[in-house]
Image (cartoon, rainbow, N blue to C red; front, side):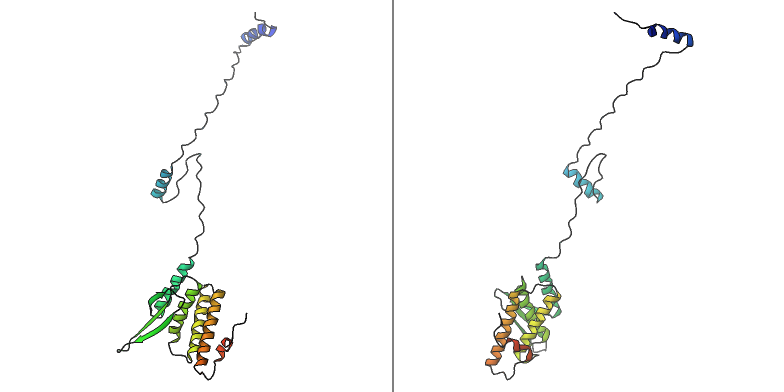
Length: 215
């Protein structure tokens, strides 16, 4: 059974007398459509778009594209620096390598032909580390000075080693304690050999190598 109030009775009469229309009930708003998630591009599509445009693909609406962070370019490898040094020295002094030795020894020589032309040669271990590059540069040092240009022979050895160490410092190549011991031992041997052969006076540069190395 329906129950009516006085307002329910008089409200239609009021609208009829005043000419009012029945109030409209506001329509309920429909919920907005849920945005659809864009389809994810495959790796092949990403690569294809990048190749076609030469740029990273433009993300679709609502799509998140991960950006790759470029790593800083690595510096040249140490082996590349050794190889560049070898190529530069051989070209600069017009020296040919007869063979790369497997031992830690080297030799430099020069051949003069009847027509006056000269061929500069050397043998040394292939530079792959501080010791081998030091030996290689030492042999180049002999050609830099000029074979037989300095007397006595032990003094030429000294200047050849100083050339090698100076080039290594200039190029930022590591001079290890093992290299320093090798230089000292080589020069001490050269001085001892000169003394056994009756050298009259030891050059001042070589006096520190007349005895045993301290330490």
